[in-house]
Structure formats: C-alpha cells, structure tokens
Amino acid sequence: MIELVDRRVLGGFVCVDAITGSPVVPAIPVTTPQWTVKPNRSGIYVIFNGPGFDLLTGQFIPTGTWPAAVPFEVTLQDPSRRYLPRRVVVHAPLAVPAIPPAPVAPAGVFVPQQVPLYPSPAAVIGPNWASIHASVTRHGSTPSQGLPWAVLRVVRNSDQSVIATGQTDVNGEALLAVIGLKVQANTTGHGPVTVSTVAATVTAFFDPSVLTQPASWIPNPDDILTNLSNPALKSSSQPVLLASGQELSMSFDLTV
Image 1 (cartoon, rainbow, N blue to C red):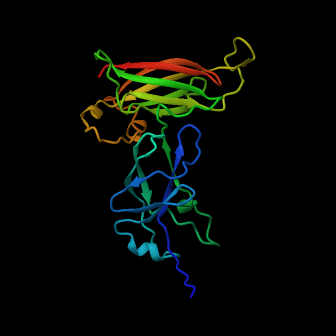
Image 2 (image 1 turned 180 degrees about the vertical axis):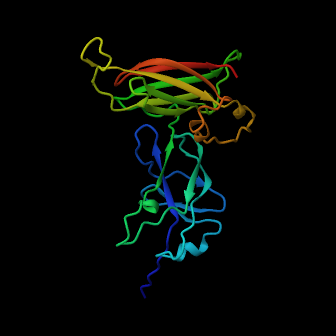
C-alpha cells in the first residue's frame, strides 16, 4: 500500500568553503541539542523540528500566523580536519513563501543559510590562488605562543571590499586565499594602464577572553566578525600586494 506523508521542514543551512564558496560535501557532523537537524545528500542540513514547533511540522499549508524565527546554535566538527571546527547561530522556522495569487514573498525556507567553514592551515592550495600563510602570536612570549581562533580579513584597498577571511587554529596558524585574480585596470591614475597585482590590507583580530576558555572550547568566528569595533579586541594590520599563483607568509604579533 502506498501512503502519502506530507511533512514540513522548518528551514535549513549549508556549509560552504570559505575560499571557494562551494558547498562542503559530504556534510560534516553537526551537534545541536534539542533540535532535529539532518544533512541530505546535497550537503544541506535540514531542520526538521525544534522546541515548541511540533505542530508546525505537520502543516503543509500553515494556518494562522507563522511564528517568527528563533536563533539556535549548532557545532560543526570535521573529523578529517580539512576544516576548522566552529559554532554558528542559525534560525528557524524560516519564512513561508506566499501562495499564488498572493504577492511573491521571499524564498525563505527554500533558501538555506550559508555557513562558511574555514580551511585548516594544511589545506591544499589551488594553482592560481593568491594564498597567505598567516601566524598570529602573543607579543613577548618565550617560546612564541600562537593565539588560537584569531580571525583574519583581507580587504582590497581600492574599494574596501573583503576579499578573503580566515581563522587561526589552536596553534595560531591560518590559511587565507583569494581566487580569481586577473589583470585589472589601474584606477590610481599613476603608472601603467593595467596592473597584475592587487593592493590589500590584512588584519588579524583576537579576543583575549579566548585565553580563559577550556582546551575543548569551540569558537564562533562571527562573534568577532560582527563586532569588529569592540574595543576589547586586539588587532594588527599589514599591507600586501597579491597576485594570482602567489604564496606568501605573514606574521602578526599582538600584545595581549
């Protein structure tokens, strides 16, 4: 006997490589207390249920007011260590699209939230990438002490756009990479009409409170990235010229 079962999901998220933007497949293990989250074969983590949402999961066409999304935290840990572990806040239930002939609503539940995963320092580098091996250390430490879970950004000087983001591992080492660099028009008004390098600034940010966390603690890099003006953060910047296929090493010494 064939039985038709309709089940509504509450949303989803997908892990993407922070350098390439490609979905991470196969999906890596996820931990999230009190919520039912399972990855599918496409690498999308489907949110099936959560505290207080049992009644919504059986409504294919919801009636009444759809509740506002609530945040909850998940932990992602790659057993192969291709990517650094991280925590991230996701939201559910996501918006329900309008039903014709109602006006078109945002895709909501059909557009999974993207969660960037930062490659480990030993990740394989593409042949045309502009890559940076960065080391973030504590000033004055002997022997040198790497600062764990610092966040680094590469900002293009010409338009102040962020072109790469990375994070250090427990030893204070990180990999950043920019892909797709090509010969570009020179907008400075000086020198040749085209240039093959991109002027950028690399900045390392570190939250000193990380040093008080237990060894098993897993960070949420968004806590730094969404609060860069926090005066408690320690930071250091350096200029760099990037070119396709280039591989650089940089060190940041922070007073903590």
